Amino acid sequence: MGADLGYFSILRWRHDATRDEARNVAVILVEPEGQFGALKAAPISAISPKLREQGLLDAMVNGLSLRLSGLHGQRPNLADLRQMQINSRLSLYLTEPQMVAVPDVDLAMSALYKAYVAPRSAGPSYPTKGKILDAVVERLRRSGAQVRRGEYVQDFLFDMVIGEGDSQVAEVVSFAAPNKTWANVEYQMGHFLYGIEHVGSQGVAVVQPPGENSHDSAWQSHDRVIRWCEKAKVAVLEPNAATELLMLR
Amino acid sequence: MLDKDELIRVDQRGYTVLEAITPGMRTSATHSNPHTFVGIDGKTYWIKGRVQQGLVAELIAGRLTSRLGVGPAARILRVLPTVLAAASAPAELEGIVCGSEDAADTVNARELSQFIADGTFAPNLVDASSRARVIAFHSWLGMGDAQVLVRLTDGTVFSIDHGDCFGDVATLVDPTPIVVDIPGVDAAVGKDRSLIRSAVQRIERLTDREILDAVAGIPGGDPWRSPVERRHGIACWLGHRRDRLGGVMDAWAQT
Image 1 (tube, rainbow over the protein chains, first blue to last red):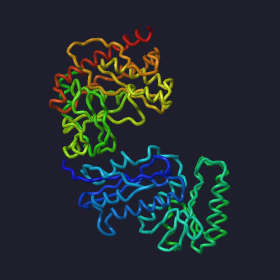
Image 2 (cartoon, each protein chain N blue to C red):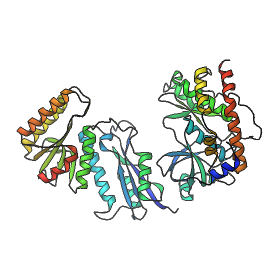
Image 3 (cartoon, chains in turn purple, blue):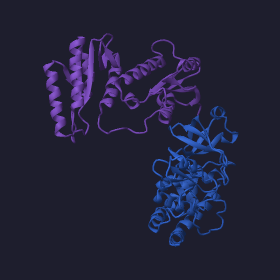
Image 4 (cartoon, each protein chain N blue to C red):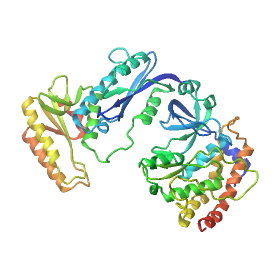
């Protein structure tokens, strides 16, 4: 079996600059002359639980991913990767490029991802807000939408800002956790509804209903949030239908 | 039945070779000077090109450890010259070699003292049942230079580094108990009749066919030392000792 030669770097995130600890965010693969390239990232929610940090990481990863796809200009080669590594520093940085045999780009990426980036724990089995946000952002981008995650519009931080301007913003909430109290989720939705009144964008709520084993309090809170959205004339979608929000614009 | 013709027939299924795609950049100062590589399956392997009793020993024992749940699995890997060069690894690691899966959060018991000294690991965490399983396994294989890993998170004990077994399989000898010293841990941890009995039963439940599967499908060549006659001898030796292990270990556990 013949194998092409590639080079890979790991994108690492040092969330506390005072400590020598970092998490592997993504693996980047390039061919020395730029014949192929790819990026595979861990779910952003698995890297940081903080929405603003998620936004910064997501923007960086998405930008690199577009660059490596070669769809918007020349695909980076090894020299570019070395330069990116030299330029990267502080909290988000690249490791020194290392040689890898590439019998098949997808197989090699999958192996490198599993070896260096994949979270060791899958996290909770129920759909958390972070997991839903990961999935919805990916689905919207696959549909061709421009999505910015964890971004401020004026003075308000939104889960998603969709489109080129600030025309559409979205909030994701999940009632699927085995929680008994839901005040924090209600506060999030209250902040979202308050925010959209002030920024003048169209708001969409992506709401994961409670699961089979959820407490009654989850349904009570869920129904309360749905009533708020109806009063505010905010569209409510379930996560698996989230791409429909693109048709609401 | 541990029949040579049957082994030849099983051999005809061939074997799977995993490609090593990049160096893992870790080495160990043990006899076989292993280096880590990432396989095309995304797992990291400690790769060896030469061991005391041939790579056949490392692979067969590694297949048995994973079958019995007493240690990391062993696989056949191919290391290309370009990958080897990037690792600055010795030439003997090039080609078709043997790799043992890297076990996360583990240390060789020989290096455990420093983790005990700095408070990272408490010796009383060592898991008695996994140690009993490893004692039974090492005794079954008659392991020379026996070594264990200890998982720092829960004290589970694993068997590793199986290059020094099956040195002389021509004479069918009964097993003798082999206990690897773990610094700071009483030798009696795991020496419990019911734990040893349970560990032995796992080995006794291995069928002749499973032993044949473990010794079949192995590459040839000098570092492997795997002629069918030798592998058949290993199978017979394992079968004999499997059937004698219970009595020996039961008597030892009562002393």
